[in-house]
Length: 439
Image (cartoon, rainbow, N blue to C red; front, side, top):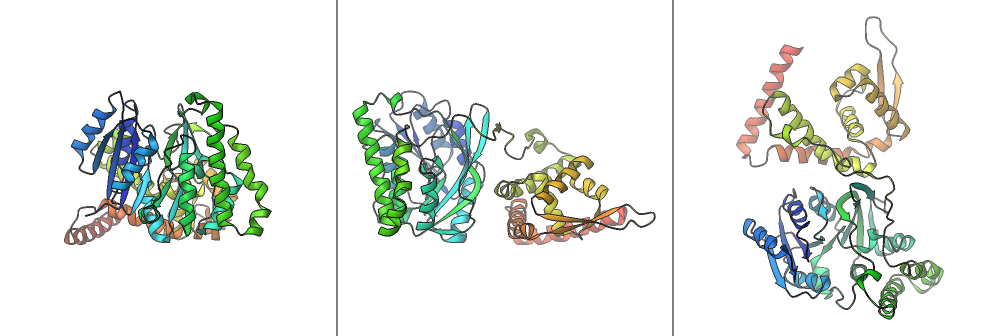
C-alpha cells in the first residue's frame, strides 16, 4: 500500500538531535508514512544513525549524498516521494505525537490544498505556543494572503515544517527548492506553492517543536553584496506573489503593506524574537503523563491509563481553544450529564479539589462557555448549581465526538468485530454489577 504522507528530513551533522527527531516521527499515531532521511555529507555519526533506523523500520528511506545543501536534499526526496501529501522536518526539531494525524484529518475534512498549523518555539528549557490565523474555516488564496501581509516575516508563514502540502501540486507545477540561495528558501517555496493552491486552512493546534539554533546570514560568513542580492531576490518573489494574487487596484492599495517585508528582511530575515512571550518550562506545555504509572498493574493504574488516554484525545481541543485539560474535561462531563450538580459531586467525579473546581467554573464563565444558576436548597440536600452551556461551548461538541471516537478506536485497536461486540456486552454487564453494589 502506498504511503499517504511522505516526511522529508535533511540531515547534516545532527548526531546530537537526530534520534529525538526520528523517534518523534516513528511514534506518530498516524502510521501510513514514508520517511526520507537525506544525509547531506555529514562528517559526524549522522549517517550511521540514519542507517540504524533504516534497518529498524521499512518505512525509512536513507539517501547519502555529498554536501550540496538543504534545498538539494529536499529536492532529491521530493522526486522520490510517493505520498499524497508532503511534510518536512528539520533534524534538530521534533513533532508532537498527533501532528500527522491532525494535519491529514484537517486536509481530508476540508479538501484544502495546504494545512498550516501552530507550533512550539523552544529556547533552552523554555517553550511557547506560536500561531497567527484563528479562523477555523477554509480560506481562499486571497484571504490567506491578507493574513500573511500583516506579519510577512513570521516563521508561521515562512517555514516548511508547520505545513502539509499536496504532492500533485508540487509535481504538476514542477515546484522545487531554490538551490542558489541559503536564506528564506523555505518561504520562496511556500510563495510558489501558494500561487497554485486554491484553498488553505489553519489548524490552531501546535504540532511541531522548533528549536532556534540556526544562524543568521552574517554568521554564515557571506559577503554583504551576496546578502543584499539574496534579499532582493526573495523580496522580488514576495512582491510578484502579491501581484499575482491581487488585482491591480488591490495591489496598489496594499503596496506599502507588501513593502513592509523588504523592511523586515533588512533585519536579517524571517526571525522570531529571542525572548519567548508566555513561555512555559519545556514538558509542561502538554498533558503530563507519568510513564511509570502507565506500565503498572492494578485497579488504580488501570483507571489512570483510561483517564490519560481520554485526556490525550481531548488535548487538541484544549490547545485549539486556549483551555486547560480540567476545563475541557468539565465541559465534556456537562455535555454528557443532566446539568444540575452539587459542587461536591463535580469535584469528586472530575478528581478536582473544591478550590480547583471553583477556579474552573469561574474561568469557563468568564470565557463565555457556561453560565451558572444557583438552585434553591432543599432541606437535607446538598446545595446545587445548574450549568448552562453557552453557544461557545456547543461549538465544541463535534470536536468532543471526534475525541471520543479516537479514544474508542485506540482502546479497541486490533480487535475483531466479534471481539468488539463481546467487549461491549461485557462492559454493559460490568457497569450493571458495579451499579448494584454502589446504588
